[in-house]
Image 1 (cartoon, rainbow, N blue to C red):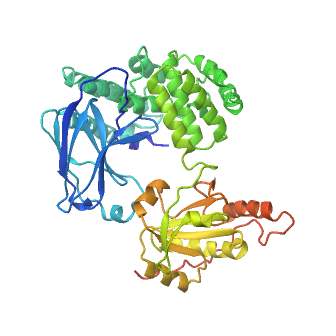
Image 2: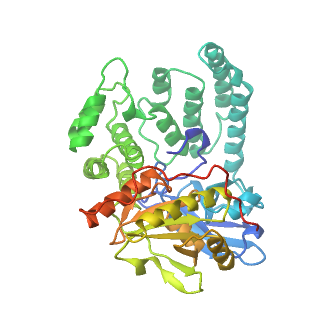
Image 3: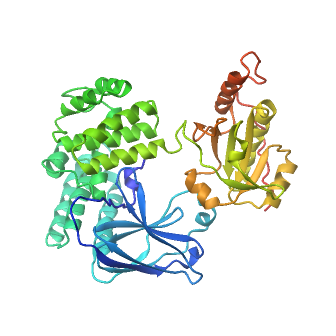
Length: 492
């Protein structure tokens, strides 16, 4: 799950039943160090699952310039995306914006399988929304850094009065701000600040949440809501008036949506039906992501929420949660991809339908990758007739791949991804090497799968036994021995 203190601003873009006048908005700038790559303007469909929709895209030319003219309706934060590189921009429809995207850090050029958040230089033609929110964040973050010594139970009482002074000063400073979006943002950003500075839950609820409908379009609301109800289904909440954790656990395991909602009604901090339903959607999404319950049970509860939720925005969160949880889930079809083998031939993963497949995605032959490949070599000796093993690089050239595989006697399928960017996105590769285990119908058995060792061998053994019920396993279920000395990384 996303850690609240590291969340970068996102924007909720929802279609509503009433008409809002769209205004032509210009977004232009330069991304010289990303020339030749696709740049997109995206809108977030909700703040809790971070699903996005593409508004427009173009290839960045060799001079690095880009320009978008969009008819936008909603004020808020949009995403400028280049692969996994994300820049964020608050937009007031009808305004003009000029962005200069800085040169990426060297490590970010060669490790595309991670999120890289960059804060671009922004020039607004009319509004000051980006500057005002940035100034607000700098003020609060500097306060937290300057007063870190007051964190902890023994001194936290000293933190509250000085944080209250800053809160009062910020309210006074922005009291006459004309932008209603900013005023709502400020309200819930101060709620997050109150939670960060050890104010009581009851106090925060009364001041910032009581009597208010969910502000779905505000990131600061999503952050405050998520922090206030952090891991709600994992602990006994509320701690004194009623302990309903057993009821919630039973409700999810049996697919009893009504029992779950009735249990939540007993929390005095959840008097609002819309808040209860939003909390159910976000917590079910978290539980499904962490696989704390059977996925089909979580999806069943989300189905009920989709049919019964009061707010359309909450139903969108639930639908996005379902889509996200189903993506790359066990039992779903794996994305097909093309790769070049060691002889220059172009292959597709789908050509190996009919065998179990264990695929490793890696970037280069660093020491850790080679160490894991040495374990794959042991597994290949035991299960190679039943499991087809692949090592697909997103970076290395074929000559280097062939040289290294020959040097270490790696005798399974090696190749170079034909479209590394598409592969990274379709398999959601956030770190490399990453592993996936696929059955004979090209459906995921485990996604992502364990790295080479005892855990993946258990899955191999299960597949072996299903095919050969009366044939003994070649290996015992234990990690193969690893050489004590690290494998030397080959020269680049």
